[in-house]
Image (cartoon, rainbow, N blue to C red; front, side, top):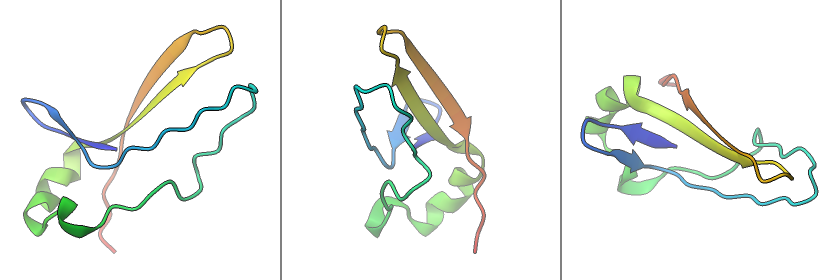
Length: 76
């Protein structure tokens, strides 16, 4: 998960999974938590339209794909 800005992307959370069996990997479970001073109150407005999830995949033939999904921030 990263915050997109004008000059560079700021990584907020990074997780890596390798599976060489060809089976489906489920990312809907807990993959990590963002806590501490990583996100400050001042950053909340910036997060609203600039928060993205990046997924890189490689199949058994070595073909790589990269996906970027914009996340919607909801205050609860």
